[in-house]
Length: 177
Image (cartoon, rainbow, N blue to C red; front, side, top):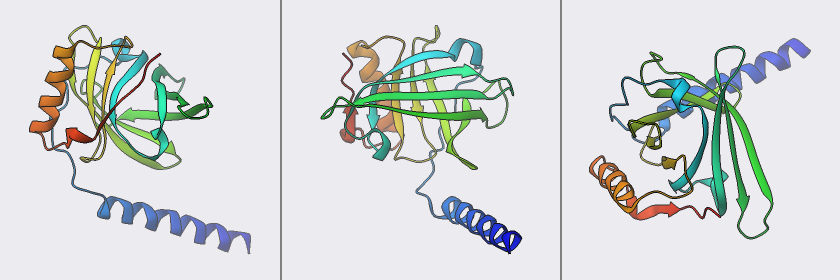
């Protein structure tokens, strides 16, 4: 009986994965940064802006910290603080390269076998700030090694995102204290 339940559960997960990939919104088709060096990308990044979604709703002081795992994948540690309750929130995930380690295209997972695109489409030559697009037009982040970013860099990233179909009027500018 346990084998039957396991088979049913596995089938449900597989069907859910197929349905997710078929039904998700329009994909972003923007070229990623190349050449890309994961060693320079590792460390802590401050979120400057995002297109809001459930996990990050009402968060401030949001950071993403990337480090190498023993298995060659990248550990993703996202953290923030709820604005209304001051409660700390954390999510640990993993990332792998979508294709070549020389390209800024990663697949990130916080939920078991389900991966989503994390595409580094713009990156400061010194790895000090970055523009990230998800698999579709619902996910976008502006990140920096510092809690602030110059007006010029913000405007350049917003203009680039707008030119590639992102609704930048929906950006949430993250409070960094």
